[in-house]
Length: 199
Image (cartoon, rainbow, N blue to C red; front, side, top):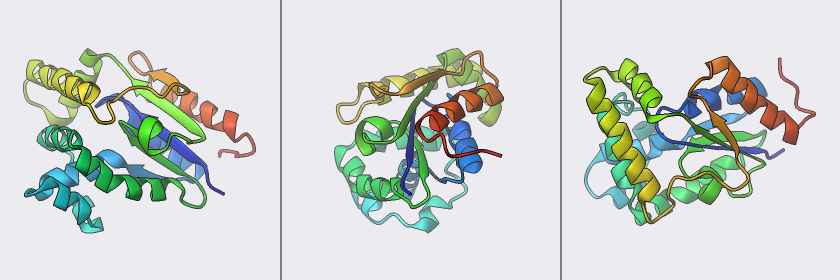
């Protein structure tokens, strides 16, 4: 059985949390596609070559969740050749037997436009900055500025800009708890695959 859940949205909106919860609840394989770009940036050197040579060990680095790694990932993700080098890997993963959930910024629009379920998870820049600040610390005003800068770069890039797929379910987590957001996302999955039960 092949069943793909594509989740897109800006940084710190909650898409990773929702994706992991869905993978656990429905027994799907999970891929945080942003980790691919973070790993490419962390490898250094020519980003296209780094993308082509990406390995499982690269994804296991312990420095991929920092704010700096996220900013660097956003820069290399704007390079069409890097995106192209990582597309096939993501598409193969998306059709994993038993189902898969992928989160990123162009999953429903570019990587998996035929996904059975598409979600677009967002929230206000201020709330997202607060969440990121609680994770990484530092100056809150600077974190907010970086969130807005990354939004502008991700939404404004020429190749695969961040935007909701036309048929995506919008989940605005600004005033939601994690449980509420996961509940909405789970309902969207069950609507397309109702025979799938959850514990």
